[in-house]
Amino acid sequence: MTQNLNTVPFVSVENMMQLALEVGIEDCIAEIATYIEEDFRRWPLFDKTPRVASHSDVGVIELMPTSDGVEYGFKYVNGHPKNTKEGLQTVTAFGLLADVDTGYPVLLTEMTVLTALRTAATSAVATKYLARKNAHSMAMIGNGSQSEFQALALHKLCNIKEVRLYDTDPEATRKCAANLADTDLNIVICSSGQEAVEGADIITTCTADKQNATILTDNMVGAGVHINAIGGDCPGKTELHQDILTRSEIFVEYPEQTRIEGEIQQLDPDHPVTEIWQVMTGAAEGRRDDRQITLFDGVGFAIEDFSALRWLRDKLKTNARCEMLDMIADPDDPRDLYGMVQREKQRMVTK
Image 1 (cartoon, rainbow, N blue to C red):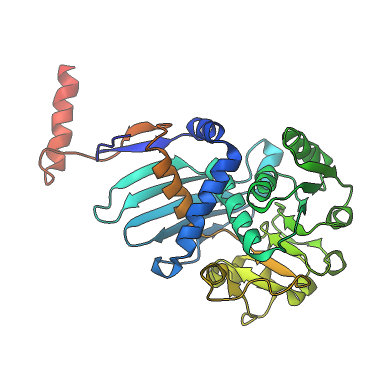
Image 2: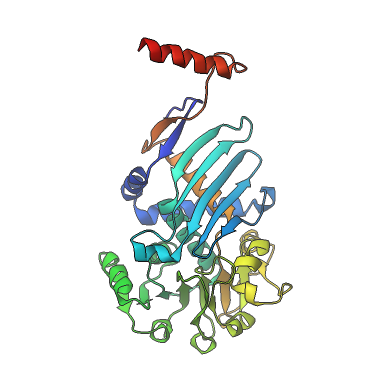
């Protein structure tokens, strides 16, 4: 794809879905995971700030910006759990990648589907570094829009063979099981969270209610388990009992954001945590033994979106699933924007 600086490639939802199907959803997740690892290994280069959030009684709207000094990216994302009752998505998103040297955007894209892919990729990367090497079974508690992506990610990157499904809404579980039926995963439908975690090496929690909830109680978590807690992503929303946190070695993306939004908002501000990028680079230890409980308190961070945007930008070089948008003004004289508008007036008159 050849880009004119005055037009910007835009990837619609339709184009994103078609690209994901052409590449293969599991392969997309695996490729994005590679970009995430690359960027986490150069973590100190990035601008980092907790997401800029605007909270309301019914949800949150957030901006997630970052830059590596060469490129700049941001995502706009909302979280409105009540939306499903109105036939709307809980989470929607779009994002932009720009060139730092000129300030010109180089990509505009939907990020509802792309965020699902990158969130699953992030969980799989964390699991690869933190779970026991012989892990083969996962419990997926919360079977909403992220659940299938999570299962496929751990199947692809972590060799998971069995997925144990539970949701307070049985229809959500049936939906997830039906969507995964054509994979070679062993799907087990469970009637409770307790049943779901029995025998599971990995537990992933991904629920939507905006409240302090106890999805996992302390007695549900045995020795050697790895937990991906990815449903808690704003103040006042958690999924795990506090006692689980005090028994676990906790790994996070960006502590300054996770202490506001993640499971560790329940703990003292100085409670020790390890940044997952440090494990990837060897600067910190991950899992120490097979009996240790590891917890990835994943709230989603801007660098992961940056990685996904980079992946998509590179993918468009060989897969032109996009349309070009006329977004950048291009006056003959860069100082004469007014003159450009007036010439358009003349063109409209003579048209």
